[in-house]
Image (cartoon, rainbow, N blue to C red; front, side, top):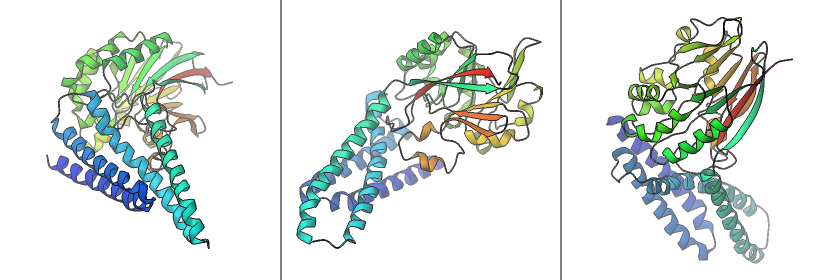
Length: 376
């Protein structure tokens, strides 16, 4: 309870500061004809955000995906308006330093403000359209030296965040599209849950229809809602949980190792922390090794060990541009395939679902199709 109170105070304080800045440095600087509408909008947004945070903590409102989408969208709108306000503030501040006839400056301001408002509306619309759009299939070819199977296909599903907004119908579509690709393996790289496990057995049931062998590692959100019941539920779906574990994939002659490492958040919670020693206990360093770990910065955990390819998520690709610039302060990679060092690659998914606001800008959701070939 103490942690929840701190979260509420900090989160709402940040939102209040953001909204105050947007009002003072954007709406109050607009032409008078736009100011009243801006004032009403910011008050309505802040009120909705207060209701949203209280509802997330207390579940005061009934389970309503539509209501959750509307309220959570307000948080994303605040951030997007903050970006617009920063840009507007910068342009106006620079313009004021330029010697210019005041009468002409006033004549230019109205059309300039109208252009900014139109661009803001387009920015918000883009966020909504990309946020609710179905995930695209992102096919990536990865070359791994001495890999035993040429054309081995992994479908990676990451950051589904099944819970208040993402339900069984969404997951049914994802499973159907995954099966249509006929992968050799499905890797679910964390943040599958966004509510307690006891509320999600029905919504997660479509995962039982996956045709290929499926593997799961924890993400940070699994620890927020009770990791043990979640792992038990995942196993009932026919999905193998790699809890700091490895498996040999293939036969005695041709095989590689798949390693799953628990999320870094486990160390902070003191529950199922990452344990690389245990995870690699049965791994032959002479064989190709693929690692599943939720956060890209988990690369530091496998330093000095064989890791031909790590599959991660967590970042959502930044979800709403330019938020990715802040994510980059914490994570080494935002999205896509990267060579971390010679012989070690990482692929970071932008996520198959979304968390919080149903908004995405320049970071569309994806079903990742990784095709592994032998390096020439």
